[in-house]
Image (tube, rainbow, N blue to C red; front, side):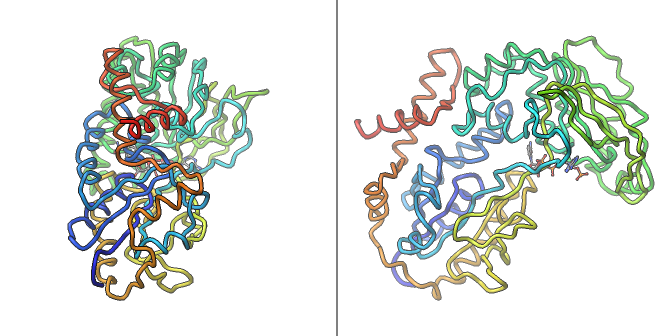
Length: 450
Ligand code: NAP
C-alpha cells in the first residue's frame, strides 16, 4: 500500500497503546487511539490499584507513545453510539479492537442481587474514580466483608479494605473515596477460594503484600492448607505455587498482633447463597473437599460467614461491540493470532489485542507480546487492505463534532491532567483524580480556550 496507512485502535489501555507503539515504529503508518472516555490509559488508570505506585508509573512510558507525531488520542468517542464500525472503515484502512473485558462474571447463587452485594469491578471502578461509578456507590458501614475468589483482583480489593485512608493519601484516589475509607467500619475481611491453596490464582508478590499491612493481621487455618496429590505435584513442579503455599503456611503459624483489622484467607469454601432480609447479612458457603485431580467436590456441610458487604471477584468478561463478531461462550472477539474471524473467515482489515482477544488473563506486560503478534499480522496484510475513502485525518473529527460528539483531543487530556495535579497540589498530594464526567469535560474544554 503506498502513502500513509491510517489505523484506528479502539481502546487506550495498555493493550491498545502497545499496539500503537508497534505500529508507530513504521514510518508509513499513522494511528488514532480512540477511547469512549475523555482520559487515556484504560485499566492502568481505572483498574490497577491506586497504591501500586510503581505499576501506575507505567503511565510515563505509555504517554510517550501517545506523544509521538504519528499517534493521536481521540477521547469521548464510543463505538456504537458515537461511530459505527462501517463508518470507521471509511476513515481507517484497518481497525484494532482493544476494549478489554469490562464486565464481571456472576456467581449465579440466590441473594446475589441483594443490596450490599457488588462485583469487585464496581468497587475497583469506584475507588479508581471511574466516571461511570456513582460517587456514593459505597458507604463501608460493614464490619465484615466477604471477597469471593482468590485471584489478584480479590487481593487488591481486600488490601484496599484493610488499609487506612492515611495510608492511601499518597495515591490519586478522589477525596470522596478517601472520606468513605476513613470512616470505614470494616474489621474482618474474608477472602474465600472454592478450591485449595495450590489452585489459587494470585501471584506471590501480590499475596505477600497482604501480610505486610500495618493495620491488619492475616489469619490462615492450617487445616485448610492440606494438599492432595494434585496440589503436591503443583507445589513440586511450579515455583509460583510453591511460593504461594509457603507464604500461606508461614502465616498459619503467625501470632496475631491484635491489629484493628483481620484478613482471613479461607480455602475449600464455595458460596452457595447470600443471606439477608433486605440487604446482605451473611454468606452461606459449602465446604468442599479436594478430588485429587485439581478439582473439588461439595461435602454438603455448610458454614455461614457474617458479611454486610460482599465483593464478587470471580473474573471478568468481554462485552460484544456493535457490528463486531463476538464469541458469547468465551467472551472474546474470535480471532486467529489477532486477525478477527467471522464464521471461520478472516474479516479483512479488523484486528484485536489484549483481553478482548485472549480473555482476562496475564499481567499488563503480557499485552506487549500480544500486541506485537497482532500488528505483525496487520503489517503482513497491508498490501491487500482496501483503502479507506476519507484520507484527511481531520475529516473524522469534523464529522463527529457536527454530530454533537465532543471529541477530547490530546490537549484536552493534558488539561485534565494539569487540573488533577493542581487539585492534588492544593491538598499536599501529587494528584487527585477527577471522577465526575462533566468536570472532566469542563477541564478538557479549558484546552480550547488557551
Ligand atoms: P482470576 O485470576 O481468573 O481469579 C478468579 C478467581 O475467581 C479464581 O480464584 C476462581 O477460582 C474464582 N472463581 C471463579 N468462579 C467462581 C465461582 N463461581 N465461585 C467461587 N470462585 C470462583 O481473575 P482476577 O482476579 O479477576 O484477575 C484477572 C487478571 O488480572 C489475572 O490475570 C490477574 O493476574 C490480573 N491482575 C493482575 C494484578 C497484578 O499484577 N497486580 C492485579 C489485578 C489483576 P477457580 O480457579 O476455582 O475457577
